[in-house]
Amino acid sequence: MEYIPNILGKVSLSGKSVSDLILFLVAAFTAIASLVMFFHWRRYGMGGATLALMEIVYVVVAVMLIVVAFLSLN
Amino acid sequence: MITFEEGEQIVKIVRRHYLVIIPMIMSLMFAALAPLLFYTFITSGFVPLEAGAISAIQNIFTKWKTFGYSLWLLLLWVIFFIEWTDYYLDLWIITSKRIIDVEQKGFFHREITSFRYEQIQDITVETRGLIETFFKFGTLQIQTAGHSRDIIIRDAHYPEVARSLILRLSEKSKATTNQ
Image (cartoon, each protein chain N blue to C red):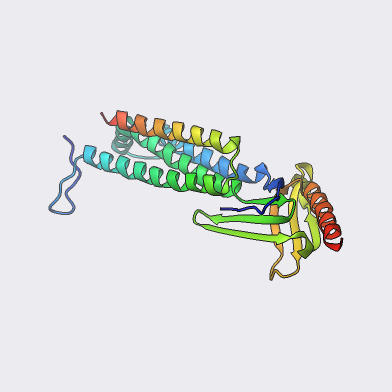
């Protein structure tokens, strides 16, 4: 297994661990941003079909990209 | 949350013209293509790099391309929607009793101002340049009594239509008040 140089002197991380961490951070950022956006849309968006459609498109694509990234690791 | 008064009806919602988000969409599309362009540029031989460096870059791309590119696209996708939210929720709601100016200044910064038609003193429409004239959008500015600053909506779609509507509702409101 390929290892990243041990710059901390104590911790040794594999490429897989780093990519897992990056995936987790990006997914967490996406989830938080999505929650804030949906909150805004529902509270100030005045309803309507546009927002409902955008919500579906947004979620489908975001989930698809996360799944692709996750599957590419395994 | 915007609460409406009893009997108050939404007459029109004025938004910024869709053309104002085109530059943002173009830059995101460029950002989406940037890694592919970078890879093509590096491996094409235009840049005088050592064979070892090129092979290292090719190695990284081969190993991580799907993972890295999908996360890159995901970030751009979220950024696009954050910008779109800013665009879409920046609006004016013209109701039968007042005008509500909802200004989204950032992800966590909003300003909601409302004023009644009786407060309106003057409405100005400004259309500048070829693009604004051709695509029918411009700046709509309302001077009001009691507000320290003018209410402005930039890049409003069909500002003349909104102006006529506001003037009509304003006259109607003043006539009702005088009765």
